[in-house]
Length: 224
Length: 224
DNA sequence: CGATAGCTTGAGAGTACTCAAAGTGGGTGG
DNA sequence: CCACCCACTTTGAGTACTCTCAAGCTATCG
Image (cartoon, rainbow over all chains, first blue to last red):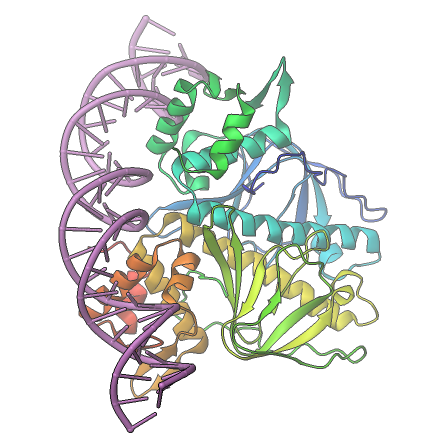
C-alpha cells in the first residue's frame, strides 16, 4: 500500500486471490516480527497477502530508513529486479501469504491468467508509486498524515456508528519512515488532528475518524 | 530515469532497442516542448526512447508539481494502469521514440521476446522507484542534488579530459520538482557545489564534475 | 509491580521555503 | 547587427516548518 492521492469514492482494490491451477503452493504463515525476505535475497517466490500486514523498507548505510510500502491483503509483494529483492520485508502482524513462483510472472509458465494478474499487479504498483512520489516530495506533514489516514480508512477502515475506525499495526516510527518525517513530527501531527477533533485516538493503535471530510480536505490542502 | 542510490561502478542500463519482428511501427519524432501524452489519456502505445530527453510529471489541483522521472535513451515510458496514463509526458529536447503496442506488454501478442523485455523494463522501473523514495523522503537538498548529478554523470556523462561533463536539458524548476525542492534551493545548492570546486558551471545547461569522488560522497552523507 | 520500549511534549536550532529584487541569456524584431 | 524583451536563474533577507535533543509519560510484558 502506498499513499495515493485519496479519491472521494471508494476505489476497487484487487483483493481477488491469485489462482493457480497447477503448482499450487501451500499458504505461508508468518509470525508478527518475522522477516519474509531481505534486500539482496534472490527472488524465488512472489507473495500475495491473504491476511495480516507487512512492511517493506530500505536502509541507508548511516541508518536512515525509508519504508517503501505496507502490504495489506490483496497486495502482491516481492517483484524482482535482476532476480533480486531490493527491500526488506517484515510482518507487522501474524500474516498468511499465498506464494507464487517467480516463473509465473516472468515466463507465464503455463498459466496465462495468473501471469496476467501478476503483470497487472506490477503495473498498478508503478502507478501507485507515482502518486506516492507526489506525497513524499510535495506535501506538508499534516497533508502527509491526513493522506495516510484517508487511504487506510478507505482500504481497511471499519464502520463504527457514523465514523470509521482504523487499526494501525505499525509503530509511529514506521509511519514516520513511510511519510518522510520523524516520529516526533508524526506524534505532534496526531495530537494536532485530535485537538481539532478530526480524529480521536482510542489507543495508540486505534484511530477513529470523526470528520472524514475535514481529513480529506487536509490531505490535499496546506493548513489555512 | 530516477535517482537511484548511485553505485561506484557503472551499471549496465538497458539501452538495447526493443525489437519487434511484426507490427513494427514507424519511429515517432517529437519536437522539443511537444507533449507525448497527458494524464488520463488511454494507453495505446508504450514508447522506448531512442534519442532525446522527456519529462514525466503529475500535478496537484493547487499547482504543485512532482516530476516523476526523466526519460533518457533506452528508457521505456507509458506503462498503463487500468489502461490509462497517470502522468503527463513532454519532450525536453527533440526526441525520437520507438512506439510499441500496449498489447505486446499485456497479452504478449505473438512476440514473447518483446513481451519479456517490456516486463523486465517494468520490473526495473519498480526497483528504481523504490530507490527514488529514499531520496525524496530521507535526503537533504545537497544530497539530493549530488545524487542527481552522480546518476546523470554515470548514465549520460561525457568524458572531457580528466573530468566528466553533463548536459542538463531540463530547467532548474524541473530539477526542483523532481527532487522535491524549490528552484531557489536548487540554485543555491548548485552555487554551493561550484564554490566548493566540486563542480563547474560552464553555462546553465552544462555542468563539469571536477571531483566525482567528493560528489559521490556528498550524495550519501549529510554535510559535515 | 517494576522494567522497558514506545509515545508525547517541550525548547531551541537549522534547513529549506517565501517573497522580493537584481542579474543573465537567448530570441525576436526593428 | 544591435537593442530590447521575456523567461529563467541567482542572490538576499526574513520566516516557518520540521528536526534535534532532552525529558517526562504511558502502556505492555515479564
